Length: 341
Image (tube, one colour):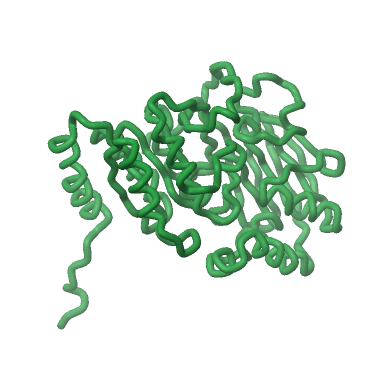
């Protein structure tokens, strides 16, 4: 058989088939409240996930369906398609990367997002006060009028992020924590990856343009934080208020123990030490390095420098516990938006 004649389904064909299957919602359930669960099957420990979700939703009288991601960015288009077909709420089960994809797909739609933590660090859900217990997290989505807060979506090149971007050593730590190790060791996988990354980390020169201001400085890693979506006390205490899409940029100049501990803390969501790291703020960030450096955003590897980073004006409404309610930030007046997909 001539292998060149073998037919393989294209991604467009897969999307059309999925759309036809999902289209049954509108005909079958137009009068019911429908929640779509988008799940990354590659994350999490072995436990009865579907049974817990089904029991919680059915007890609350919520009809639900489930869609599975198979590769990066699937969550984005699955969320967009689900909204276009009438879903009243979207839930996502996965790690920070999957949550970011789905949240990006919901930006500007007004459809609420419920997060079911299923990853290793779960920085986004931890910041929002969402319980790690699956049944409790599902129960938040079942409330008749759930409390929500805004997640402002950041953009790094053509990818999206919710909380942070890491370049250089910090990205190598994330890259070294492979899926198998994270499933087996949890947060310890990042500690082991940090030890490996400390083996003669390369120093490079960072050429940064921050809202037009040019800065040239040497370092081993650079971390960019979307402070609107973080509860780090050190960031919350810093002006301006509201932040209106302001990014916080930190640089680690050398790989000493104190600096590396601070970088490791950001990877697992424990905050950042402002006393020992140079710090800037900007709405638009361009970074070029003398030697290409790895880049990660919310735990997902995105290739190498150079990068352009900004925060869009559209936001996603995410469901949170009432105990962790926070005042809604003022509506930002940003001239920035996400490009059409």
